[in-house]
Length: 85
Image (tube, rainbow, N blue to C red):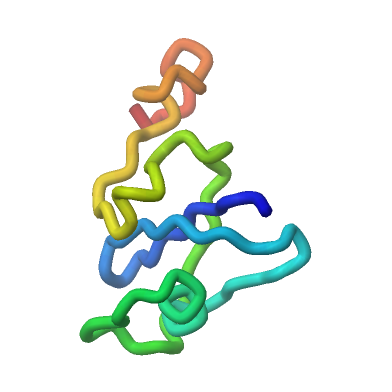
């Protein structure tokens, strides 16, 4: 099963979870349940966004990291033209 990275804009956390390609995770509560982590003070209905990372931003051991690398920092940006670096 593939792994996916999700970001919660409200609390800044990025969480890596494993699920089927056709599964969809839309809220912090769904993400916490799938990852087996406590939601903390973030409301369960807070939206989350799946990141297009290719699995190389964070590792399974760093679940919950709050500072993702930008595409430019990972070398995935053509000459820094995306404005994210």
